[in-house]
Image (cartoon, rainbow, N blue to C red; front, side, top):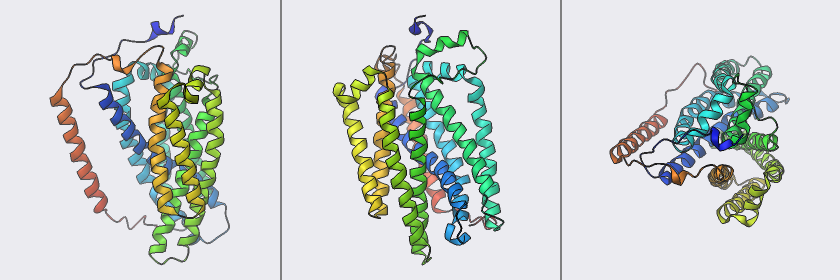
Length: 356
């Protein structure tokens, strides 16, 4: 069956495609940083809960105290890139969601379960009951399951050639298990979460050092080690992912496409710089390099999506019906929301019950 015959018609958009592409990449980069910190803190927390050291030295309470807030921010910020990807690639996203509808709807339930456990962990560790190893493990399993489902959704979106599987499995449980890029792609993102989780731990240590905590420097060093070695592992998964790509896409990243090749080289250079800075113990420089690298890799991810869909679709061909008033209203709401978020961040309410 011709895969292009299964692709629905595209809707009109109210502004130029490049405008929504910038918004998509910008908001998705923020979402990735928050999501990686959330999942990463859970994975780092699980490993560190097994160590024999004092509760204060472990700082598990502070780690657990951050996860609920990060989860809420991840979900809420994630709405923005979801909307923008619908604008640009809605005819692909809606189909991929439908093909794996059971798992797609299950994501919300699994995230809510992990969110509930995060609050349980926050208050339990504040009371000093135990290290919470079992709960850390459950949170990791739930969030890793969500990440795997999201990875498969992203693959179905760019693989219309797999959509005909619906006729053999029309029950909303279709998944692209046979895609050779699935496992390296997923492992690449999971190790990214471990890296950002380690960087977040290092930030916790830095803050403790500023408050004259004798354990602060150790936490910073430990977090930077987590970041550095997890990023090194990302290079291995990244090479596997690159080699597993269809040959035309691989050649695009090997010099066939200037933008794809340039972004790949820039991303690798940024990651290498971040690793070297982490091994030298330069926390703020490492964080800056990591944020810049995430931004580059987000743009690279968008280029990869476009290369996958090139035989079927080009966002530049989307039917355009300019609506300046709608765009102005949207940008005004974004500006107002940012003002509220910044104000709320500067005037937090102290949770005395669950303060770590």
